[in-house]
Length: 377
Image 1 (spheres, one colour):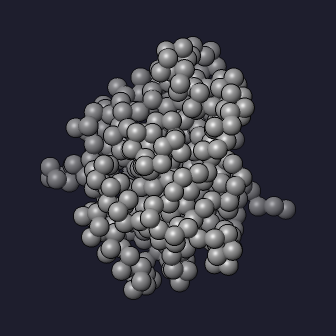
Image 2 (spheres, helix red, strand yellow; image 1 turned 60 degrees about the vertical axis):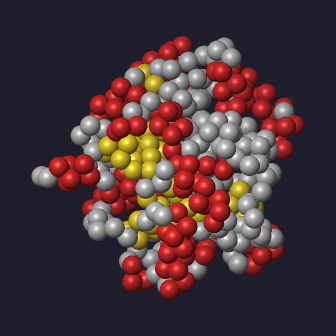
């Protein structure tokens, strides 16, 4: 094996959203972890205030997580980690492990993670300000405030988490020397606390690639790729702008069947239908690519942009209009588009690199999903 080939199989890949979340980071993480044989999939981001999910099949049930990363879903060998910068709700964490039939031995939480309490959740629910900015009422914001004030509990203080505790940064940096590590961020760059032009309509921390590296304690020298996930028609929950592009009306969204065909029909945690932009604000995209240091772009929800490519998995099925969008994204960012998503099913991706599609592992994943969602009798 040459030195160049070795480098392709080690190091960390950070997956980060370009805009306001719901870009498909979880499904992207799962596909890439499967294709690139990730040894670890690590959760970065604020806390369980964002949902990552995928559809095992087009019209089937929805597999979702809030606390865990989603990248493990197609990769039975991948270890699951939560970095020290992520707020943890112990009850939610244990419930996800149980609901998804995950071997508890696969899951480790950094002992320094700040802990969300019922009081944090209740404070958010009572806050008019939190409601106005589209909060998901997960308790993450108030937990982070206590963490900054040095009054929060940490994972090491919770007896129920004792068997899950680990030094996640030490492990991630060690494993990244010889293997692939996927770091799954949450939400999107334009919701970052310090970078968004829409403050206070933001989340409670930065959610950029460097913030994700910090959340898991990743040595930047171990970072191989920054993968920016770009939604073809960006969406947003709560207040704040959608850039300088026109927002589609509710009637237009319904008329174009974009709610029904969305990976999540409504806001994942709020129940509100997401607001949707008519197109990408390319100035914001250029900014997101710059501040994240994007090395690859994944373009998602192309079935919303052009229904003719719905569920396509081969290059030959992409239309001229889609190729033009791919080229414009590349020209705007100076970054190659390496993967595109074309529909709801978890394997509705077209790989634009020379890497082999992981069909064997996709078949394995379908069997696993069958145990979670057995056919109705």
